[in-house]
Length: 169
Image (cartoon, rainbow, N blue to C red):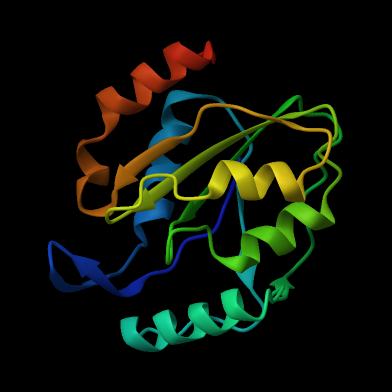
């Protein structure tokens, strides 16, 4: 499993809250308790601002310019995996551009990519389409979208998703 998450000021039921741990990181932690898997956190070389509005503005610029934000540290070796779970928030109806940086730098041919997201109202957004484009030769499985404010209560939803995907718990 690999995921990108951002702590800091975050949207919360129409207002704002400050998260010590981002929603997607919390969801990834929950998932990793259900399945035995290696976990890789995707970190940006240039961290996103703590301020929500500044992060939104940066994300819009990155999407508008089709940017590939740099990743800090080495990428994981995925050669020995058949299935790769990819987690991210949904920003402006799609995964942050750093996820495209990540997927384009890996060879995921012949693997199954399983997206999971945290979101406010966009569900999976364009994640499946975007991963299909940036992961040529990979199969894209049914994803899971959890509302950010509801991550801590998503256990039953995660288990049902695993059952549909026939992933071992």
